[in-house]
Amino acid sequence: MKKHILDLKVVEVVRPHERYVMLKLTNPNGALPEMRPGQFAQLRVDGSSTTFLRRPISINFMDKKKNEVWFLVQTVGDGTRQLAKLLEGDTLNVVLPLGNGFDLEAHPATSEKRPLLVGGGVGCAPMLYLGKTMSERGVRPYFLIGARTKGDLLQLELFAQYGDVYVTTEDGSAGEKGFVTQHTLLRDSGRFSEICCCGPKPMMMAVARYAQSSSLPCAVSLENKMACGVGACLCCVEDTQEGHVCVCSDGPVFPIEQLKWNTRP
Amino acid sequence: MSDLTTHIGNLKMVNPVMTASGTFGYGVEFQDFVDLSKVGGIIVKGTTLHPRQGNPYPRMAETAQGMLNCVGLQNKGVEHFCSHIYPTIKDLPTQVVVNVSGSSPEDYAECAARINELENINAIELNISCPNVKQGGMAFGVTPEGAATVVKAVRAAYDKTLIVKLSPNVTNIVDIARSVEDAGADAVSLINTLMGMAVDAEKRKKLLSIGTGGLSGPCVKPVALRMVYQVSHAVGIPVIGLGGISNATDAIEFLLCGATAIEIGTANFLDPAISQKVAEGIDAYLNRHGYDSVKDIIGALEE
Image 1 (cartoon, each protein chain N blue to C red):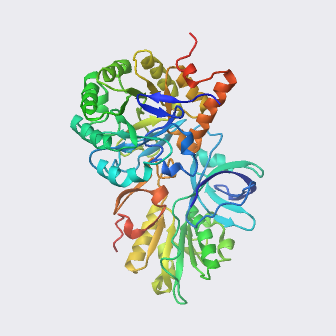
Image 2: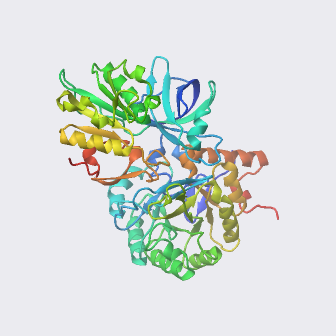
Image 3: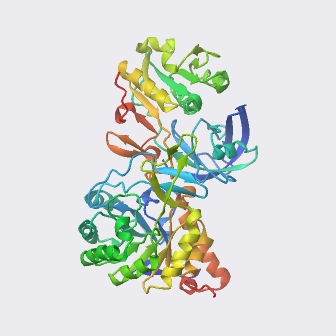
C-alpha cells in the first residue's frame, strides 16, 4: 500500500475523559488513502520541548463517505499532551497508512463461530475499525473491552453498532469485575473463530495463553517504541521465531505463534 | 537551476545530499516519499561479513531535540546483501553506497572485497565508529593507529571510492582524519553518533538495553559543525558532513564549514521526504545568492 505524508485538517475534537482525546481528521486535498484495520499513522508533534519523534497512533476509525480518519489518543507524555491541545480547524501532519494490519481472510467466521476482538484501555482503538470492517463483510464480532475503571471505557456506543459488547473493569464500576480473561463470555471458547487483541502487554499475554489453551488462532497488536515507522531504523524490533523483526513494518499485528512469548498454558 | 553536481573520489552525484546509514533502510522504504533521482546518494544499512542479530530491545530513547539508539548493526550479512538485497536496489536512480562494518581488519577487508564485485555500487562507507558494538566498530576508530590498520586492510581489497566514517568520541578527530587519509581513504564522513545514556528516574532504570547508545538529531549539530570545520581544514580529501541536519539551511552551514557533501540521518524519521527538500533548498539558496555552482560555497565561510 502506498504511504502518504498528508496535512490533515481537524474537523472535530472529542474529549471523552481527561486522559483521552479523539481527533477526527479529514484530507482537504482529496480522498484519504485506503487503510486496513490494525494499521497505524505517525503523527507529527509540534510545540513540544521534550518530545522529538512522531507519535505512532493506530487507526481508530475510517469513514470513507465523510472522508474522515479518527485517532484515539491517550495522553501519556508531552507529545500526546500536545496532540490533545489540537483544536477544530488545526492542521496535523501525518504519515499513513503504516504497518500490516489484521488479516481478515485467514480465519473465516461461520454461523456458530465469530471473531472475538479484545481491547484493553486505549488498545480498544483499532478494534472499532476492525469491527466495522468485519461487520461490512457480514460478520458480527464479539467485543470484549477491559479498563481500569468506568471512566476509561471509551466508544462503547460505537462498538455496539457493529457487534456484541462485553465489558470488564478492574474495580467493578462497570461490566464484570476483573480482567478480560476472567469474563464469563470466555467460558465457552467454542463460539469464537479467532481472537484479535490490542492492549497492555500483560493483558495480551493472558489473552494469548487463553487462545493457546483453547486452540484458537490469535493475533496481537504490539506497540514497541518506534522511531522511523517504516522499517528503516530497526529500533522497534520484537524477538520472533525469525529473529529480530520490525514491529512498524513487519507488524504491528503478529500471530502469537510468531512471537517468543511464553504463553504455554 | 545551479550546478549541484558533486564528486567524492570517483563517485559522481547529482547533488551533495546523501542519506545516512541506518536511517533510510535500503532506499526502497522511502520511495513513496522521495524521488530518489533527486538525491545524490543513499548509504544503506551497516553490513558485516557475518549476520548479526543486533542488541536486544529497547534500542531507542528520545531526548530533547534528539534520540539515542543502540541497534548494534543488525543485518543479515554480506552474502545475503549481495544475493538478495543488491538485485532489488542496483537499479535505483541514485548512487547506492554500502556502509561496511566489522570486528577485525580481516573481516572488514573480506566484506569490502565482496562488495567490490558489485558493478553498480561505486563506493563504500567504512564504519569505524559504531558506538554500540563491543568488539570492533568504534574500537578501531578511536586511535589513529587502529583507524589506519583497518583502512589499509580495506584499501588493499577495495579499489573503488572508499569513504571512512569517523567517530566524535575521540580526543582529537583531526589526528584520526589525517591518519585515515594517509592510509588511503578517498574521503571521510563525520560525525557518527555521540555516545550517551538515558535513564528513567521513576523506575530507576536504564532506558536502553545495553545502557548506552549513540546520540543523534539536531542536538548534536554544533559539535558536528565544529568537527567538520576542523577536519576539512586539516585534510586534502573531501569531507562529508553529517550530524543533526534537518533542513537546507543546516546543510548549507556544513558546506560553508568545508563539507563537500552532506548526509541526512535522523531527520528522515521526522519527515520522510526531507532529503529531496534539502536538495531543492540548496538549489534555491544558490540561486538567491547568485552562485552558479554548489562548489562555490564549499568552505566559503568569511573569516
